[in-house]
Length: 95
Image (cartoon, rainbow, N blue to C red):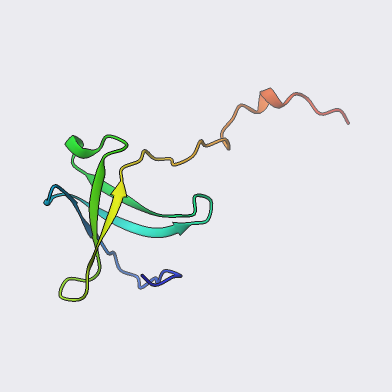
């Protein structure tokens, strides 16, 4: 996989398999410096969407070299969003 990711103004999708059957499509892969892992957004059948479910992604272009990548379903957002907290909790600033 090339890093940094090449933006080519096109949408790429990768197959998501469970027990050899197509259960979804993944897109927007990239490396997360925060988690030190590759992450990808995915649309997946509800039956396989529980966090912790292990799946296989088929990365690579059809007709060219492809690789099976083990992946684990995780909820979004991947980390708590603390940017939308109640600002009243911060207290008043004296000037």
